[in-house]
Image: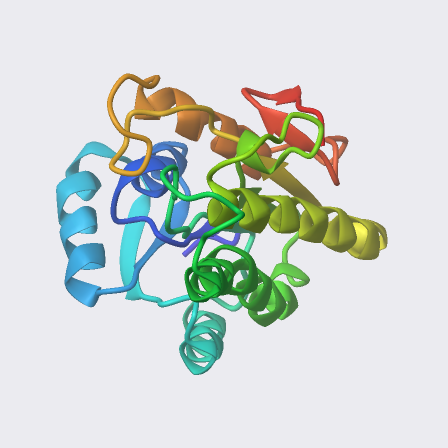
Length: 235
């Protein structure tokens, strides 16, 4: 494999934004490590997508709430590829639109944070050594404007708080990794017609394009930002 071929890993990539992000990165010629909690879901997504893209798609099982599993995959990627150029933290759960902060079960909130915040955090930590081996490392946290403090209102408590925390993590990582040239940004895909977003939203291709933009930024690109469609959003 040419060392010029970018190696990208996308979590939660068997459907929705993650799947389309994997497809678009592979269409750019990346080798994409397409991750899903269940091996068969990752394998099926690769089987569906691979014939239509010039890049390589490789299925991997990954549950971001399983610390041992995350570390094991990082070791496997090190052996098989030696580095990672792009990490897209996309895996997320529980768009809890019917819940309210005054009454939501905090066990549900805790479970949501375990995937949406801590899952991204532990995955970033596990793969940072491999990102440091890249000539152009990029880390993208797939967030949501529901995590924007400036525009936050009631409702969707677990999801909104988890994404606000993910945005804060983005700022922390970006500042700490700036000197190492690792660009770290959060991206809101917008309201997209997916299983989580429901019908009526924009096409999934549009939402994923903003993620791919952040994943393929030039070295002069921004870090520590929050974007949708390549344009800044209010924190």
